Image 1 (cartoon, rainbow, N blue to C red):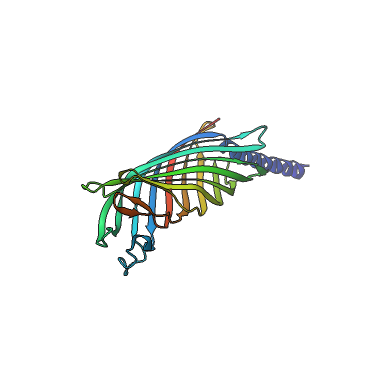
Image 2: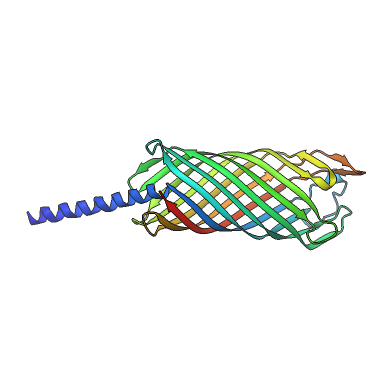
Length: 278
């Protein structure tokens, strides 16, 4: 009898722990959050610039322009399990601003080895998915739509500075997996793949505005949530995004022939912030 009682208590304790784990996953998905974000930005234009008649200006490198550096910003989001926990929804917005290192060439072919560009990057995204909970694990296949914008100040701090504005929409399919490591600690990973849509560039100083080629887009990330109390928690996350822009057509402007070459962008970000659960 004593053995049966101990066994029943042990099973009850395990079930209680599993239930606590389950509840911790569900609580993490009903929140609003705010965080500091450090963005590691990398942009490169391979030396495919024949439309500018400067194909041989950069024979020693595999790029024509490139920029890289860390910039500061913030991220805000809200997520929830809706319609009796049958639908997962998340909206997010992030913004970063700062200066990055610029390396490239002038239109005449003169190297610019160590200049500075200003950068303002903003994104918003909306996810909708269907959660599949299984004890302390939840999988959420999702569809995501978003918008990305980058304001680039080439030659920042010089008399030749000018602004370039890049933008695109995107749609992607992905999956989010969450695991309750303890009753208060939840780990999450996600990955998605999709396509950029409506990519474009405008350069007001040269009255230049053209569409760009679309490309595949990949995103991935991981986060760790610690629930300090029923309604408050802290978290850290790392996120990765990669996409490209295809070359534009040429456009005459003020005696010049302008085009935007093909480019590749990689963005990694590191977040630390707070969540408020509801």
